[in-house]
Length: 589
Image (tube, rainbow, N blue to C red; front, side):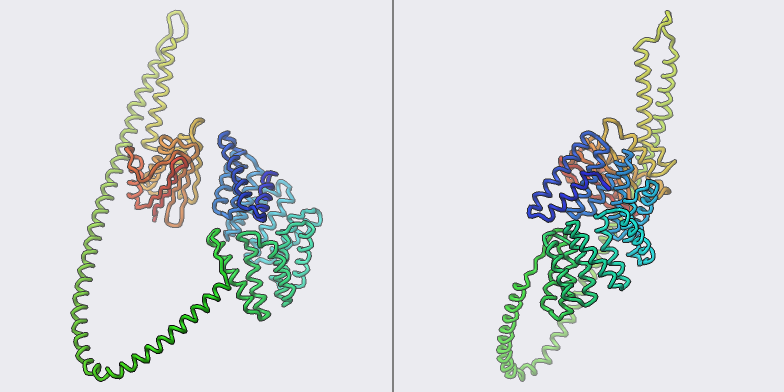
């Protein structure tokens, strides 16, 4: 599917996972990939940027198991492939995005993308990619238990393999066929398919495929109660996967071996493998934080604790006997004072509870009063912010109209008057000074129009928030300016005007800071609707700054004021020399 460089990267990643110098090899690969990305950025070459982001996405998935970062880099790669109009790269990115969506359980979103790719591959008469697409579509139907659709896909793939010798794809196809017949409880056919899968992996000399096939066959043996054969397959697959960290296949082996030993009444071995399963599962969920469980040490410590507890119980028993003897001697005296003690206790408790309740009521009243004062202060602050922001917008609108109507019209009139000045008496062209004055008037008219648009964005009222930000991004982008990427998901076209204006001002202010102060070369802007919240995410690769330091510029304070006015939350992550990230959550209920 992908170019030769991407395939070689995946092979290098897998070899790094299996080899003893895993850390060193993977670091060298990562350095080469990041160096290629930096070179592509320096050249501002869209095809190279698309390829670099794609290779990094495959690395993050194969080595670091960081699917979230891999998904983001695939999305960026897709953007650059679309700018480059590379249809092959576009289809490859969409295919891998759909595959990752399936891995994350987002089946409906993945299926929609797969259907779109199917139309493309059919029009391109690409039988190989159609077969790969069928494998992913089979995963969707299998998850939905639509077995008729699964059978259709398996038959179509079987016809494809009769015409094409695609060993890699066949290695992925055979385990799916095994799972299909196993689900239908056709264990005889499933076992036959599993045998074919093992033979094919041996012919291909692919150890990872062989491990997958052995797990599938061992699972069938387990269902058929052929425990010796099942354990043999599980052990052989474990020899391949034991060197791969965070392997889900090894996790499955531990669980299956525990179940097998349980069936043949070997509880110690069953417990041993379920402990390994739990330890590896914890390591995977906590991202490379390996939790080692030493069963021998655990048992030894348990015996030591049990012995200590037994000794303590014996000591306690001796003390208890001594106390019983003393208690008998004091029982008569204790009964005599019991009534008096109970009376004193209840009197003290009554007054103690009364004082305690009074303090609680007083404390609650103080908290209520403080809460009311805080609410009034917040309300006053919000009203003050609202008045300030409203005044700013009114003043911006007035200045924009004055600039556009008065100064803009006046400059246009002056330009017309200047253009009407006749040339020299001899009929020669106008003087250079007059032409320069006309050009300067054109620049002034353009500057007045730009300032007027910044003060009062007309696109916001006419078209909505997303088109207004698109217009803002287009005005900021230039041949010497930064590269700005804008993405949006689920933003409604109709929105409260004050809310839309505040969001526009926040984005405008952050972009101004990134361009003028941070001197960023690449800026990423994303607006996303998450349930009842709107999320603004803006990143740049500029100089960065200290968010806790107070600056003379009011830009950052304006951003905080508008976020507070909208009752939102603001997170700033900035490091000098690396860049800045703004994440803003705004409740839009």
